[in-house]
Amino acid sequence: MRGKRENLPGIKMDRWWKWLLLPGMAILWFGYMFPESGVRGSVASARRARSPAMTVCYSLAFYAMAVFFILLILAK
Image 1 (cartoon, rainbow, N blue to C red):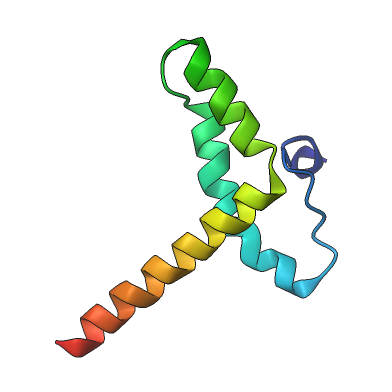
Image 2 (cartoon, one colour):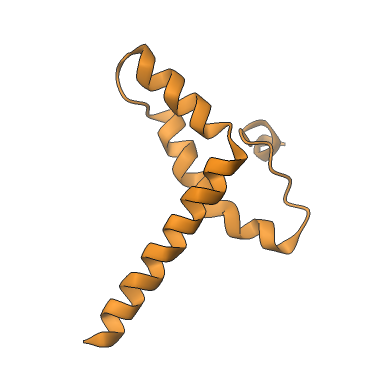
């Protein structure tokens, strides 16, 4: 019940690959719950949090950084 209410971008977890979007959803949720000060920061964070495209972008960035750090660790 609670997960439905706080699913701001409205992404349904009905396919297995949509679970890969969880890092982006978590990053955007934290940005929504703790916005920058002022009205401008609140409006911008709400706009990003409701965008499925931003969820995909943040998830891709998370996985790119994870792969980079894993390769960096393995290179040593």
